[in-house]
Image (tube, rainbow, N blue to C red; front, side, top):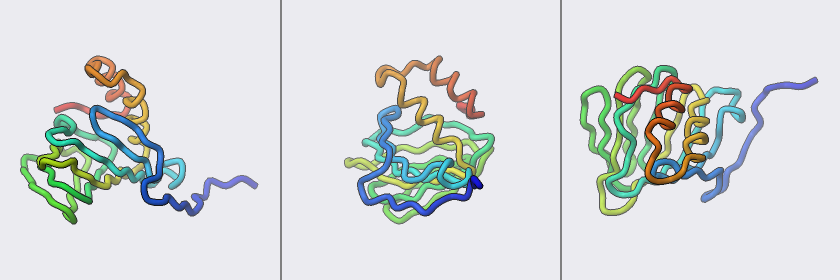
Length: 149
């Protein structure tokens, strides 16, 4: 009898599926297909002065736990400066963005709840790296109910 029950998974340090998206390196530690759709967890390395534009998720909440470096997060009109060990919750429906501020790359763990939005990053990783094709980016965003603010 088949089951969709998630199985335990060990992801050693430095391992996971690597995606290159808009200047950032994302490492998928666990994705929706492995958690029964409950959540996805990604490790993100962000070069200095890089980060996504302001955007709104209609379906997912996001959490950002800073592993290293400093970030400026903008969430719902608030400007939050973070450093190692800081956690920021970005609820669905609230515009947000972040920028790696320090001289060295920032590192964070990002949770996506429920899972599924990690497929957006997978699609973006297949686009030519530079310059970004804005129409293709917007088309992919629409598929995942993401709106750039």
